[in-house]
Image (tube, rainbow over all chains, first blue to last red; front, side, top):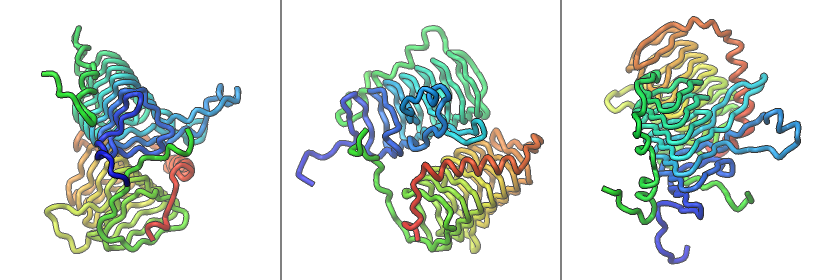
Length: 198
Length: 194
């Protein structure tokens, strides 16, 4: 090793992703980051669990197989200790994993385990949340700490859910969607972070 | 995507002694699984151990049955902070799934055949979980507790009996299919632990 400046805690890519060196990303070639996404230390993403059965329309046209296991939008924030893994199930008699899609401005709290099929934009997931396989979470949803979202649950837009198992406990108030913006949070981490605006 | 972009998996800290292992030749164990302890670790045929799963035999033997799946960050054989056990084995029956981040404490703990320990759940020392039970995410089974066969534990300790009547053979077939797929996806390296 040459005498270079000490390495920062994060790797910052050209598209603005900040990936902690201590994050465990398995199967990186199957993980898509949209840009400006923060991945904190001890986060685990299982990109190796790829889909083994292609959709019938794709296999018929002979297109190149799409192996993306986890796709993440812009300005997402994965807190320390969280885990993303694609959901798996039996499909036409064979077992396959399905891709996990995540929109923009998704916050994932500490120690949460996400096995959803799809997560919309502007979703806030608290700490210690378990999201079951093939759950679908629409836009502007707030999931409080410690929630257990059962498998296959569909959470409509603008809802607040909590409990074990998760129940709808309220709606995001009008004008409350400003709080889902993660642009300022993005600036507070990295190798030369800006202080949080007071 | 060339071969230049290799996985940036940080190195696994290999602390503690390497336990004596007894692996069946047909198991799948990820390179980054963590095995520590001094007692024997036995894994029977066709079981799958995901990356970063932690098998800790420092308190006693670990016995995993056939076609068990231990997911990432699961911790088998955690030594309880207060208890002292002379016999402190952990036994998983056949077709047991231990999901992400679940903990099974050491102390003659038994998880019966076909049971699922959900995401982040915790099975206390000396607890006996029956056959075909489902522990939903984040449930805690107290030390020494007994969970009868076909029980579902949910919402922090509420229990009911599984009356869905899912045929055991069908369920086992589904697990076998899943293991077939996992075996192709997880690069296995049992030689590292022997």
